[in-house]
Image 1 (cartoon, one colour):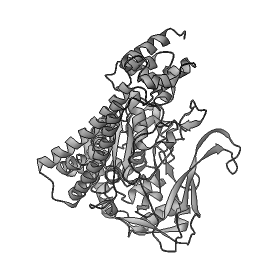
Image 2: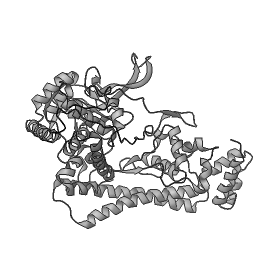
Image 3: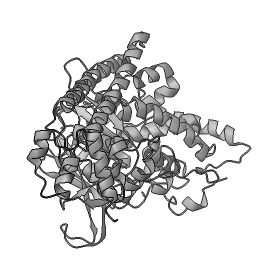
Image 4: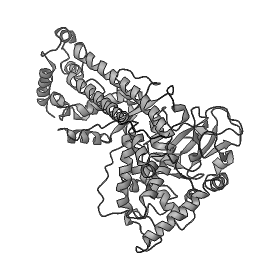
Length: 556
């Protein structure tokens, strides 16, 4: 019996043909008149689905489903035994991705485990090796209808589409690709969850990505309810891990893309290729003209240096030297990010709205009006980029990671005597005003919140080291390197906010947003008098209270 929910039947008719692209992120004109892409995609709350189920097509009766699943797992095991040979993958690429097959051949990789691509031709730096479009290659995008119904979101949607294609009675490129025996690394955290839970827990507790890793494991369990028994937990987590480890590029909205052929590109410290997204309008010629909104047209493969025949084609999976990020997404730590002298990065996640905030509803509405999400936003810090005190700057794209995080924390912690900014007079400019120091009280809360987040991870690292039960394997040793490097970065970020907190508490010459607002409201006000007296109303609390009542008197 083959079942699909009615609402998804049209969009999932052929999982080998990806869903149409969503519109690009909303763009908002700032107070300075500049148009800029917003920092994260539009809010997409997942509805609670209690009566709608995702069911993969399975040729079996309900009575015999368990037995058929056992047979399916055995069949999958037999496929894996002849898994992903260079010959089988080359044959699939010649049909599914002829442009890559034309310029590269499949061989055992020298840069990493498994297969890789090697140049058949020579290229100069800056050459466009090929441009992959939806006509000349196979690009799978997450189906938004499926993403909204699975807790694992876009990753889960891709996994569902891969499983559906693999079980389809009709031939197709993704079915052929799956049957080569492609598989994720055995060290992927989702696979370790089943094979070695102790090691999985150790890995999750050794990196600031650990919360996301363990969260995805919980989401995978919740997804089983939507799949209604058509996939075992083992099959589902294995496919999720496969998609995560094979997706090496994301679109503008940070949704993963699965591109046949590009999934064979190995990661390298000094890559020879880069991948560029190509967006445009339908019917455009050389980027001009066209109609409708911009959408993803394809992916360009560009040479970063001179490439000789026989060179292995490699890319950089992540823009930062983030060992924890590689481990979370791809299931391995590159050799160049291991050891005491390796570069490192770490990640903090901050939610712009605290659920316990009295003004949570207003802040969520503010974000929604701007096309922003209230989901946590991740910030990746690297010593190679420098960790400096935050500046007041109103262009999101030019902000450092620490400045972006400070912006979001100002938004999150604003309240109390500063709550006048959430009143009707100023709420529409609230997000923009968080580019600047709002008040001394708010800036103190920002520093304390950032320091507390760093302490939370440092305490977690201390706890796992105090437990003294490290598994005896290479992956656990790599996790130790990750934890050591991330500890140093956490201490550095915390130190910046400690210094900022000291400065705020002793420096009476710092001008806050409220000072500027008073200058705008009263042009004849002489700022130097304010500086001479320290604070116009004795202390900032009374000043903010006065400004709140003053604004309340202004008609909306």
